[in-house]
Length: 183
Image 1 (cartoon, one colour):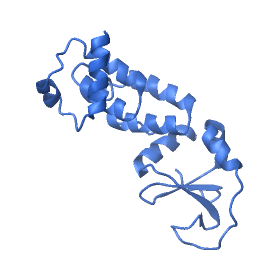
Image 2 (cartoon, rainbow, N blue to C red):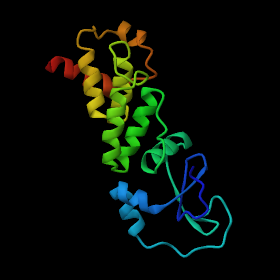
Image 3 (cartoon, rainbow, N blue to C red):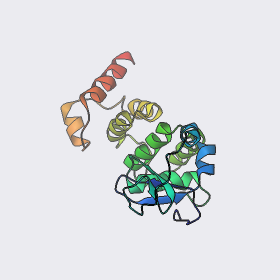
Image 4 (cartoon, rainbow, N blue to C red):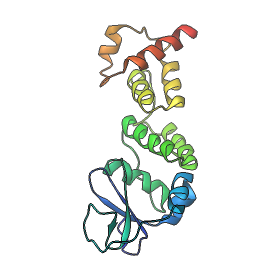
């Protein structure tokens, strides 16, 4: 859905996939994009190269997000059916992108959708995993919700190993411990 030849900007994913979109919806959704698009543009080159600042005469912006995350992000901004995350990790990555680009309206929508999604719900079974991911992406609300669900679970090395978290940072574990002590 993001390959309109009439587009006026290309957002290029970290893996080099071009998303040909319109500045208007991005400008309206995000102060970050509004400010970025108000800056003077460099002179247009006639290069037809996927690594250039322009592609087929359209300015390109190199993004730091992978293709799937960027596609999901844009699906929430542009008309059509949003591409929903299928795991809490994907949800956290998407919500972090909303935070990064200051897209507040869609953050609220995504959080409301998460609340009703069994695939991404925070439960006592996955609370430690969710906490680790939420902490990694600086998602305070989700980290706090997960920490609250873990209050009845002993925080031991065995619990941490059994939760099959990918990697929990020392800072995340420290903050979780401090929260538990404060409670």
